[in-house]
Length: 272
Image 1: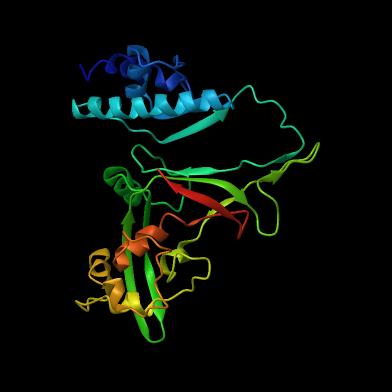
Image 2: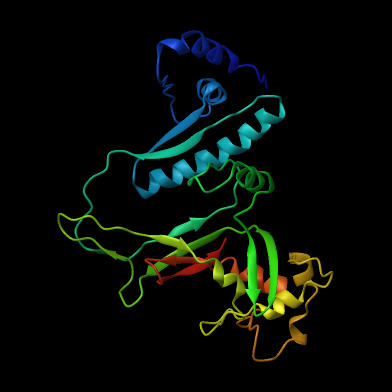
């Protein structure tokens, strides 16, 4: 594959760049030379989406194929420099006024992700894309007089469905003539829960004690060295999951449960 196919379009755009604020390259939803050349020349990507299940599934498959192909083109020497990638809902009709029971979201491993918030640094974004991460957390936790830093990375694809706000029915209620807001939030405190059951409580002392090299940081490797059978029987419950045998496994399992719905509401998490 010739990595220079997109250079013709890039050169043409460069020649007229001073005459335009924005140059739009409209491409069909197929992986032909026009689309690939446009992606090579583009600085940003806008993907139109028809809000129907079949169309969304087709787009998901198309983007997965595109990601794999762009990786091969990049290996051949092409350079991609996207400032952003966004989705535009098209042919949208007014949502029927009723309770919509099925509301969900999916957590994916990053590959060609772009920043969705200015708080995300370019370095962290590059790390997540390079290592295919779904979650990267860094910070400092304290318990009493003990203070430890941590920087943990996780991979894991999860489908969150059957979302239910606290004290309400499943999904979201859309009233006639009004706008309904759906909010998903990530609760990082789950990483420090002592159980996968609903009665879990926050505990950091045991995780802090895993810092065996006394460098002030708790690594996932140090957590892996802590056998759950050596801990108090009433703590660090795995909800019957026999595959979890150490603290790292428990923290990784918690990393798949961080999403909340409408504040403190919950969703059913299904690893994929």
